[in-house]
Image (cartoon, rainbow, N blue to C red):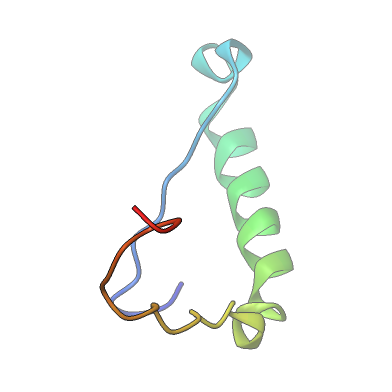
Length: 56
């Protein structure tokens, strides 16, 4: 996990009754899968200057 990074975990209803060891194993697997993609952050495009939108 990266410092200064927020994570949101969304789970299905089945996660409520799954064994804790299964949940932690699956979470670890998913986090490791995203490690290689960290450098692929989308770049934000610069915002256009303020002004009329669509000529209005």
